[in-house]
Length: 168
Length: 253
Image (cartoon, rainbow over the protein chains, first blue to last red):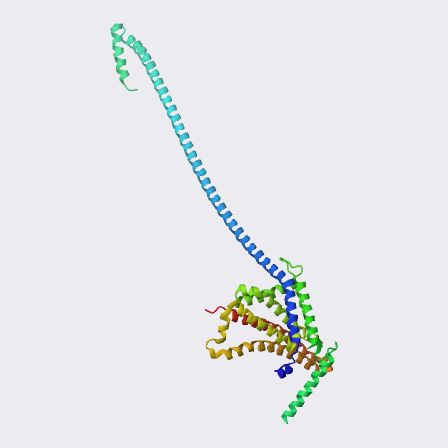
């Protein structure tokens, strides 16, 4: 055993080296190690929080997008409704205008017909009068001697009656 | 004949090594152990360890001072990445709760070994890990820690794994357990010490004029490979520590 130790050159340096290393270990444990662990933990937390924040923001953006889409859809619906209403109102108005125009036209037509009828009656009456007067004049001239005035009058009225029944 | 030739070659290379070591010993460290507090110790290893400890402290403290959350400095980012890399390893192999309680040890172990391995590449300096005392000390510490953690987490059930699957396996399991600190220490020691020896051999083999005329390329290549080896060995030591701990603390069903 001693020969082996002699051959390898082993001596108390071995113990001293272990002692040295343990001193270094204790020093690093106290001075260096906590800082490394702390910074690594902080970095891990930082990254984790960043990832969580990014996820949160993504969710918010998604919600916002959905909201906008909903609003867009709603706005589209409303616009359609408004257009439909306007179209209907326009059609209604057009129909009203047409009906009013028709009524006006009817009224004017009625009035014109009445005027025409009145004018016709007036003209007919006038004509009857003139025809009677003329007939009397002619008749009195032609048969002034043969028939009395009363007989003449009766004949003429009959004639006019016949003539009035005629369409003119 | 060949044996003597081999012996002569060995003594020749030994001569080169001692000459280079003698030339490089500008700080005047004694080659033999000196007595400190009545115990023989390798003074050079100790001084180099203290320098490495100071460098580790300087590096980690300057990295953790004024730590920024949003705009980390480069050195802070290095330490953070290193820590997270080790934590990933620990959490994968142990469960997160055990891993978190061991993180400080693993981090210190890795950064100390890394700085130790790289420190030997600075001219006239020496890796503390190029001394078998350092590596064996660390490995024994890990070994004892593994036993303690096994007892702590598995209580009496811990002793059961010595006699599994049969009682006859006890010697085998004991050899396996004892070989762990040995392999752990000699792997690290061998890699780093060999790296330093080859650096010295290259310095001794290639004459100065050849070095100036392009011989330095070999040294540069070997130094860059040594940097790689330094990282790898520190990683392996830490990874094996994690593996050993996970072996003894794993819950068997």
